[in-house]
Amino acid sequence: MTAPNSAASDTPVTNRNILISGASVAGPVLAHWLRRFGFHPTIVERAPSPRKTGGHAVDLFGPAVEVTDHMGLLPQVQRLRTRTERLALATGSRGRPVDINVAALAGLLSDKHIEIMRDDLSVLLHESTGDTEYLFGDSISRMSQDDDGVSVTFESGPSRRFDLVVGADGLHSNVRSLAFGPESRYARFTGAYLAVYSLPNFLGLADTAHVYNTDGRVVAFYRAPAQDELRAIFLFRTGDPLDYHHRDVRHQKSLLRRHFEDVEWHVPRLLSELDAAESFYFDSITQIDMDAWSSGRVTLVGDAGYSPGPAVGGGTSLAMVGAYLLAGELKAANGDHVAGFAAYEDAVRPQVMNARAFGANAATTLVPRSVAHAWLTVQLSRLVNAAPRSLVRRLTGTRHGPILNTPLPRYE
Image 1 (cartoon, rainbow, N blue to C red):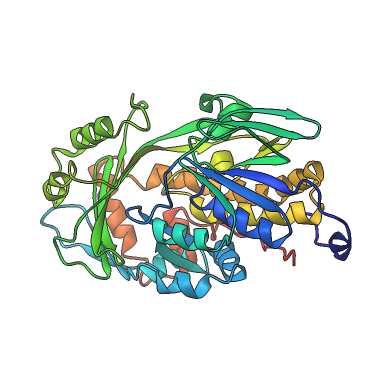
Image 2: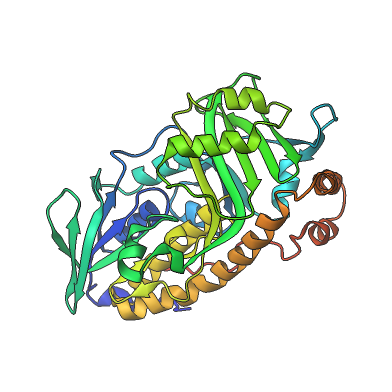
């Protein structure tokens, strides 16, 4: 890992004009730090504006909490945390659920943890980027590199030149496809799917998330405090990947209903709100497995380069840490993209490998393969509140401890 050095501030920064594709999490974190280090970032985002409603809860673990603190956002993030204190886990519609302490459960994964709604976090990060230029409602259609920079053609705006381009545009990254080839080369399907959508808080929930396990399927719902809505989460296994387009919401809702129409518990009530749900997410739990994340003057950060799998591998935390390391290593290299990109990849790789291994294990164990497996999950969950942490980690497959565990350098 490249160490910060005092000489860096005495040398003019090169490659200052940097285009970032994606304005969700990694993009704004990267822009914040690039501005702080003397670069000029521009963010292009396909959505017409920052997303302020919907979204699901995400976890900030260990180093991601540190990044948030270094950005001066920790008090705001703590104020907006979900405040979910208990999980009520059940395997039958009439069985008594097991109450699990959320703090104890999170402690298996990290010594520092904050849960926050993704869109609340995204808005905070957007506000932290100051007067950064945003190109909303647009996307990159073509890129061509030469020795002096990257020529970028946008879908609707005028073509422009940038020194560097960063793909921070998620699992189905457009920049990755343009610079590295089709997604099929790098996508590794874990065998499971995730769906999330919003609905009215029909149970008046406050601090408890409810979870139901059955064969090959998991259903959960919890309160989104800012909107006083519920977020419903569905996870399920399939033998083979499903055939659908990742922007075909109508077909996705049909697939979800088909896989859960025979499940009892609160599921019929949850599915009754499906058609009316405007905030809806559906995707495979897929990992992105690449040996390198840079190609010339283009690099990737977050899920675009190393998704550990939605909902299973701490992808939001990894995206924040990766963005911080990329900006810091470019600063340490005075903007030299060859040295900076190489140092960034060396710095983030241990985090990526750990999150990827954790995500693969979680995707296998989180969704029960049978009714017996679902019952066993509930019994093991009883240990979370009382048994020693080392024992619970061995029994639940979290024995390696923190998802992200490499100390962060300070570049300032």
